[in-house]
Length: 200
Image (cartoon, rainbow, N blue to C red; front, side):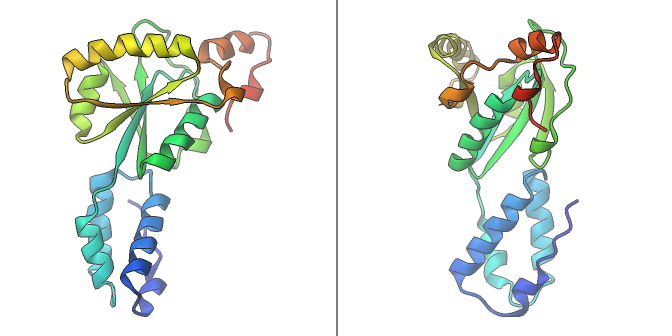
């Protein structure tokens, strides 16, 4: 569990706005922690701090907007990261879920260090089953071009039939990343020309 080290903030009393901004910053710094575990640990921490009443009340009522960015991600590349960064400007927390697509080869690439400070999940089976398990989340789908859009639109119809109330947001990557695909990277790897498309 994450160790909170912001005791010095509570040495003096702060305004409600200061407390909200501080708590949000702490929350964003701890994206890798499962949300329910974070809330529980944060409340326990704040209960032990002097002058933390406003922060404690805020955290007890805190209901962040959470998104789920799911895919086979074999590998998770710079185009995916571009979409993730855009999603994080819309949502308070974006969970990255690595799934096994039965129509694609088994994932063999490591998760890049760049995204390891986010909450990472792994799943097999249907996306809708994962969403049902996660609760109130919005699914993020990354799009490169009109071909991706047409594919996702067709997939959405199946997903909607399985889970009518599902929330999905499509995010286009920036133009400089629209040609990057995991399959293309796997092909380039055979010629050792793939590294520029990968994250550290």
